[in-house]
Figure 1 (tube, rainbow over the protein chains, first blue to last red):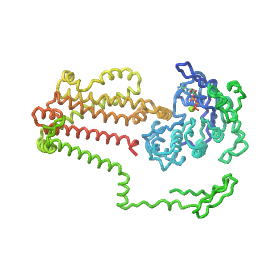
Figure 2: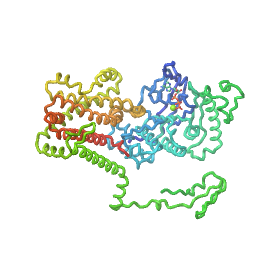
Figure 3: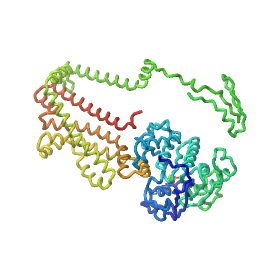
Length: 291
Length: 321
Ligand SMILES: Nc1ncnc2c1ncn2[C@@H]1O[C@H](COP(=O)(O)OP(=O)(O)OP(=O)(O)O)[C@@H](O)[C@H]1O
Ligand SMILES: [Mg+2]
């Protein structure tokens, strides 16, 4: 069976060090990420948050193996990442199910690529779909599913091959708030059951706190790691936790950090008028001087 | 359909406001600010009427679901009927406006000539030969153009190499190839098949290429990080992703194949429905001209229809709602 036992994970160590990545454009190199360092320990749930355009996706895509760092190293279990592989499951912000495959065929895809037999992979896929509450939809084509279901299938598909790490790039960004909360719970359950490492990109602070063991905060572009927080909340976590003083405090602190960076990121475009009513007082100073 | 009442579980929600159960309805009383008024729970199932499984019930639902199609078919039949009626009127009365219907056969005459034509083997043989040419030319075009389009879409270098040649040859109408084709091929039959091939080749190639350019990159990435090799990605992602567009190309290509075939047959054929139509004109058998035209139309329609059926069968995921 493709589903690893609940044994504590000893694999899935992600290490990113001295990471720089620049995109070549007509106007010269656009430095997306500069000097970033991060670690995800085996079995750990780590989030990256940061303002829009700070290089979160870039970083994640480099860990997935789709992008090569301009300099620096990305390793998983001490092995340098050379390209995409089934060791690193990925869930994308856009829905990325194969429209021509049914839900179950989508989930089976990685196992098929590995050469697993038809009946064997059907059993594995059904088990996983059951865990995610999708059994009733296994023969549906993706266009019949709601957004939340699609992303659930996407997660299950990425987990089916038993990857060492799971990478998620704002997977719930397109979902409504209620669905999102349920999805977070489902992801947490799957993660705890499978015991794999997760690197999760989001711009939603609540989501990052609720899900993560640790959180990295990135600066505006060129993105680098600005702060690192260990979430002090016990597990299992439930919705009521969001009212706890620790949660509220952490949210406020992280919010302040991100706001600072978001303002920096938009610095050129904002003026005092635009910020009126946002309780941001520039006192006549240029925004660039304030932040 | 669904129950709109809140579950009593809502009581555990961290809201300080008291809950009330709404009275038996009727007059709407405003709710005091900060109060949540629960509606009495409803039996969710009661709201869903048991579906009528009887024959009449099914028939009624079928009619309702297919009303649009039925209307379209009725309207289509009506329009064709009107067309034939108008045809009848202008030909039987030998009308001339600026356009002259003096020698144009009437529907009845055409029907009569069809009756005689179908009773002899010669006419069926013309049809058979045309269909065979279409089949060979079109099948060859599909077998060459689809893989070529897939490869060109995947390998930029190949595309850069082949595309300019294809762009130069493409605007030449198949009919302009007739003399050249006769010189190129040893037999007349081969030259006609070649022209049919050319006609359908470019629409198929271009549509396949276009489909390849529009394959969603995120699907390719998803496949790669699920362990798909280059070949597997081609088979499992690119190929199914372009299939709908390939079938668009096949449909267009089939149309052009008929255009090219008929032109070629009229110029250089000894058999075939195009030859039949042109010869009818030379032999002053006017009803046969219309018979030939109608036959060409019906054959063209039938072949596109077959392709559409095949397309639907191999792309079950994109079946219309
Ligand atoms: N192919 C590219 N060529 C040039 N610049 C790029 C390219 N891709 C991304 N960038 C730039 O690199 C920066 C980082 O992009 P990235 O997509 O990693 O940001 P992000 O943090 O994921 O943003 P978001 O929250 O909006 O998804 C952005 O400023 C973006 O404009
Ligand atoms: Mg992004």
